[in-house]
Image (cartoon, rainbow, N blue to C red; front, side, top):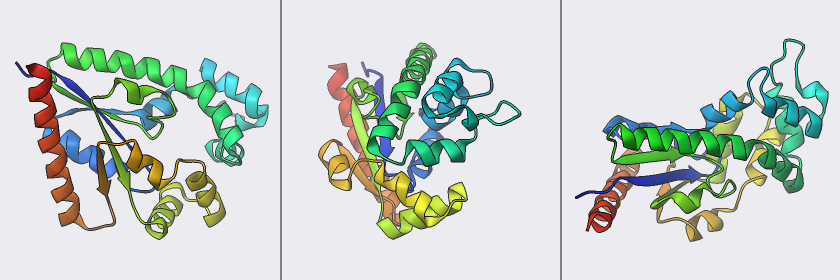
Length: 207
């Protein structure tokens, strides 16, 4: 019998983690996008949004009641201490939603659930994963991706990069490292190795 497993997908900001996540989703795995959940828990009128306002200032909430994400990011990524304050507010709510989605996916018959989470280690969700995959990329490539993706300047992009763990940390705490430096063939090759590991893990767990 093959046992359902959880794959934790994380990595450096701007490394192209979402690309890998989409590829795994296309294969047929159930994917949980924690970035989307983060936006949901900080939506207009949410308790988490109110807590963030207390921590980082009422002006992070715009006149229409929506979160000013750029302003929050500027303050929350200014130092590691400020980032930790952000995490302490948002992580419990996100993790609760993730746990619920995992249970629902297994109930629906999925045998692989991918938790796509930039905060996999920080939130403690890594402890529940059978396989941890980290996506990394060259610094200059990441910088350009972040600036384009978030429509921010270089200084703001580097703040987000510095708020994360080092490349060495990801390598030390992951079962699989995927390098995504815009070489699609290499990316597919690394993805195949991940799929092989998933199969091995499933068979081991099913014994």
